[in-house]
Length: 211
Image (cartoon, rainbow, N blue to C red; front, side, top):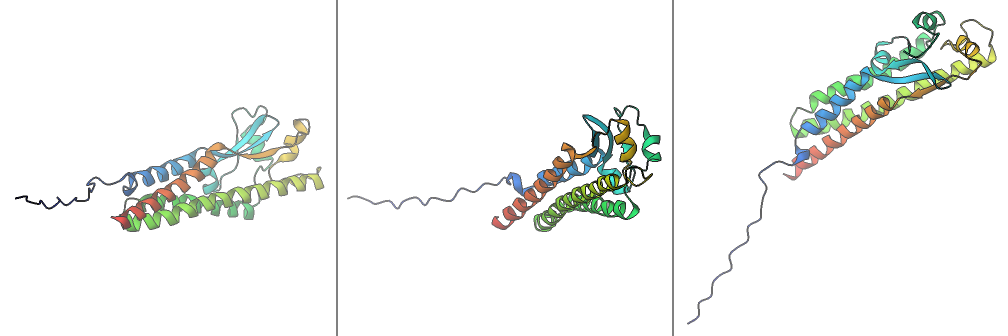
């Protein structure tokens, strides 16, 4: 007499270990990296291949003047201050607002990243995207002010103080080479780091919903 055996039920295999994106480490590290990058130069003013001045993200946030670069040659900090190598008060304030917003939101995002998955995920996603957006706004604002200074110089090259960035003295001394404004790789890495933090927070929020 044959006996039939009922098939052994197959139980689903579950993993007890949390996934990589379910932890706060990726987003908190990304936020921390972006914040630390603020101490490095975010923008530079160059004549030819020489960097004559730079400004860090922290300098923008604190409303400080442009700093003479180490290889600026004959132009020291006194020359830059003397020639008022800075934008007007309103332009400086607008740039400062963007920088403070980016830094402040980044710090808030870092703090939120240590919260639970729901709060930290949603809050970090929001602050990460806004921080990156504020940095992009800073770049456009600074470039707008710089281009305005170039236009003022072309309109009245002999006027003292007409160039907000002190470009008259610089251009004449360096054989009338046109100064250019460049944003450094550190600036773009900070933008990417904020966006990466937002992505990690989004993945963390999604993993919390699945589990």
